[in-house]
Image 1 (tube, one colour):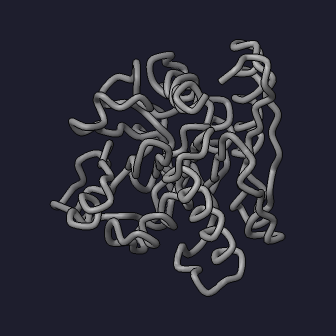
Image 2 (cartoon, one colour):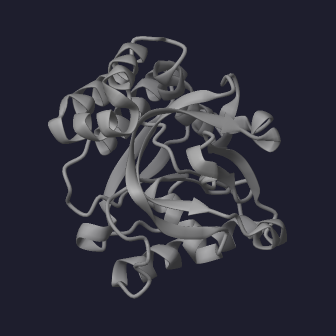
Length: 268
């Protein structure tokens, strides 16, 4: 891509008007990347669920956010328009037209994709997940460009009420997708949730939140409901250990500073 060409990025906000830090975090990462690479990058935010706002197919890169609630929203107008856009981007990428459009799908967007393409069982968890957790790369993830320079396991923010388990291997193989990362080993033999999938050369999806910085996570862990949730799952010692690990440059800091820049490097 010519260095002097303006690069347009669409941020698809799926938070449905709920106050969150992710959209600001995306902007922070993009500002830092723009300065470091000395590129002419601009971006626009689209309130997909809240206002049924969607971009056209003339953006170079799309980042589709997490969000609250049930991913079985196929009867809602925004959901229909969202997948109409995804289909148009897919058609562009499958044609001879250039440039190709890269999309990063995160958390709620990950679940929507898995529902749409039947890549696994999308189900409500018995207990919501929240915290900084280790994530295991599987063999295909170890060599994927998204995880360049990432250790295995790596640490990431996991914040969800829904999960994708029991992957549909036939559907995954038929579309040429690859499972890249899975949840840490769970007690009592519970199935491990899918944490990252590459659908094709241009679409990649993560269940975890690569945009969450240690500062944002520290603020979220200080909220009483989040604190009690973590203590309920990991105990007081686990909660204090999680706070301490936020200062480790090889854990969440490394994920925050590496994964989305890796995505942008590949896309641009």
